[in-house]
Image 1 (tube, rainbow, N blue to C red):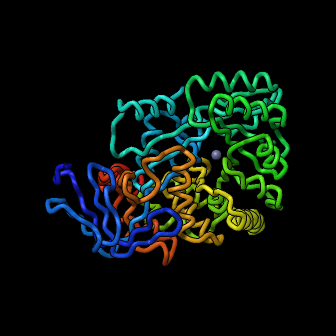
Image 2: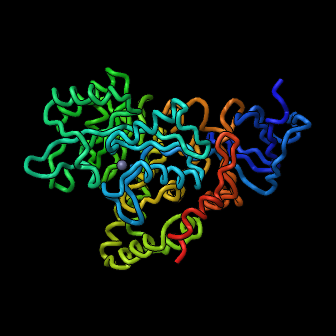
Length: 438
Ligand SMILES: [Zn+2]
């Protein structure tokens, strides 16, 4: 028998379990040593007498968020650049994610000097044992086509660290070299950056995908064009990191995305945020962590946009909303993807705004929550988390209001628990106070 002293009973809340359908009203969760041992309506639970009790009456609990697509280490205030990159900044970003209840984060292909790989390894070996840090996943450094006598078409903040491969042979050799560090995925970019850069040819990206699979790694492609999305999926890619631009997906793309081993990332918020002039920078959940300087700079940028630019940007966003609806209708495995850390996708808040984007586009709330918990856990091979159920870690996002009433309520956070341990949110706010208050 476990000693009752290690047991905590969370009771009285509405529980959204993350499986896409279950909501338990007046629920209870029995947690022993960080793991859920029992969960259900309170009246059916056996609770050891000496258990510590946490009263969550009136609250809603959902699983902590798992974001499989972002770029850690580069953002500071509103600037994304290699000059900001450091182990300290990566750790700071992880703390910001924890503050908002993001318990797992995968950085996709922009590691620098193995900072991410080393940090991840230290977490997995137990050498870095901080209960308040989300689990870091990383694709290490990704692959891109060279553009002779020009900068390559990799992400603007990491063109100097991504690997340029011009031939299938180089692609295979580079994947083999990357595999020595055992990344969590192989990432590559197929993007001509509006006609200004070379992009990987089908022959080269097919070699990347085949070699990744041969060595046991999933292959994730950055794409924007419909033809490229189909091309990489036909070649066996497991995931596409973005939705396609106008005109959006066709029946063939949906069919390719319906395969069992394939998933699609949302990456909607990054487009909305860039043109959203509705005052999103002022919401209290955001001002807790985002600096005054960042808010001012982004606000000025948004104010400088012409009505035509806003209209064009939001038209592009409408295409993404249509795409998501087509995905949902087609039963595609959709994963939350906030592309956090790029542009002004602020750590932690971007994940919540992404869930909001999904629901505003028409995805049912419980399904959007599943796309931010159970499904990404499944894709990342995490069997110990992703849903609120017996046997899983007690990674809890406790909310003051019900997201089924309004999806923005996922940002009304009362508490965050990682493996039953309460994150010191007040301490974190104090750490950032100097920059977040004018
Ligand atoms: Zn990205």
